[in-house]
Amino acid sequence: MKNIILTGFMGAGKTTAGAALGGKLQLPVYDTDHLIENEHGLTIREIFQSHGEQLFREMETQLLGRLPSEPAVITTGGGIVMRAENRELLKRAGTVFFLSCPFDEIYERLKEDSTRPLLYEKTKEEIRQLYESRIPFYRDGSIEIDTSGKTPEEVADCIISSLG
Ligand code: S3P
Image (tube, rainbow, N blue to C red; front, side, top):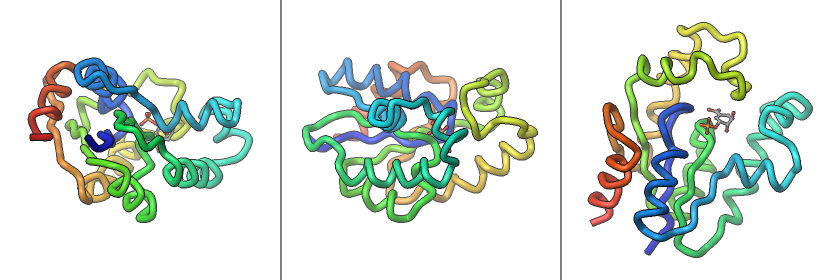
């Protein structure tokens, strides 16, 4: 079995669906943000504060070049798909799923969030623009799973059915 990679915007439910999927398939679950945090001994927020987004993006690309090779569920940071190089690395690393969700549903989940640096001091419209600008990148080479109104377990079941 190949790695199963989950992409999607912040708040799309990658972490919860990934955990459900790992449990159902008895596979380890890795999260790119957590791997970067562990490797550098800093939180994502601290990395953005002290090194900036650009360096964080470099860390993401570096990490994708050496993902675990055993079958695993890999959940990713919402911006990892922005670089073409990363999208190619993801496709090579496994089957890529885009967890899609309507913006208003995502915004309801994100509006009280204080941990995600890209949301600081942004209006709803600015976050919507970021969301819309990324949709083509999420769709590139992935299988889209509509998560709207689904529990993480149901999302995991949809992914399993699409694996065939
Ligand atoms: C980001 C999403 C975050 C994290 C970082 C940047 C983004 O991950 O990688 O804050 O650019 O959308 P989640 O999608 O898990 O929140």
